[in-house]
Length: 358
Image 1 (cartoon, rainbow, N blue to C red):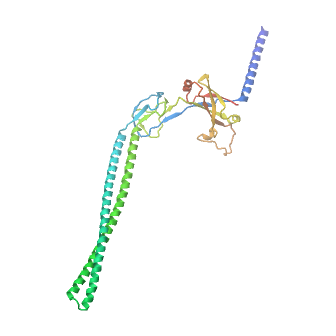
Image 2 (image 1 turned 180 degrees about the vertical axis):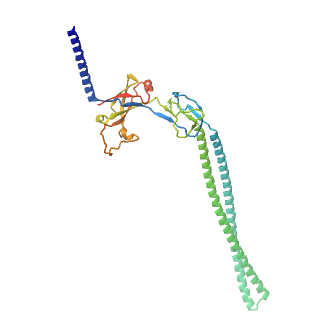
Image 3 (image 1 turned 120 degrees about the vertical axis):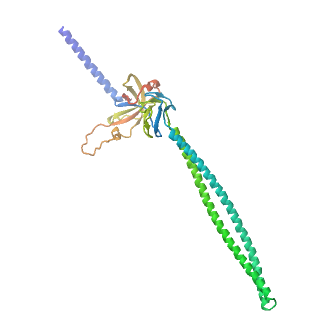
């Protein structure tokens, strides 16, 4: 009996040794053509829900973990303030348009005044030419009468009449010249006013564009009070409730896109020698050990994970201890995988990754 027990123990020990040797040989042969790591997690696109306007939540249409479609209403924000701003923007646009019409009328009036003033200047110019001709005649008559008067060929009354005619013509010419200068000055003033009216019209036109932009902004802000889903997916835990004040830029919760998933695997730097993009990968998820997912390497991180941490290590302190670094490797899951099983994967799930070196 003792011999039989001893033989059984020997057989068991031999079997265990052979099993251990077989497993060791298998792992060694496997390691020659594969690289593995269990420091890997599932990743999916997580769309943050961030309100664009401030306000109090009036109604929440979803619950924790609900599935939503793109365009579904998630929650609404009190829009009373934004309705008032919209009406104010409409009124501002009407006022700007009215100012523009008034400025156009001012330009039309100024242009008409310029035309009238220009006509007056031209008319004055023609009248001055006529007055110059009349003065020339009066001057010639005066000189002739002056010679005749000196020769006692005419009476003093005739001479004085010629002198008066000449002086009247000179006075008339001066008056007309002064009128022409006044008309020219008036024209320059009207032209200056016309330029001012043009500038006012340009400003009024710019004010219309500004008012239109403000109106569009008011419409957008009003629309932003209804927060909708940007993608199809499943919502995370809802961290809002009716009556809560939300701020622009505040991430309230997430929508997880269940249609696409990938793996971020952190390989030791000593494992990267033979790894390259395009190599096939087998992924085993801890939550679903009976299912293998197929994928391939799509990219390598430009730096080790520690370099992207909030407090990256500083090796210049003099207390350096060499530790093996890990590099994040992006692994995409192939389209051949069952889409329904892809939907079961959740971001953060742990996985085992086996890269086939070829």
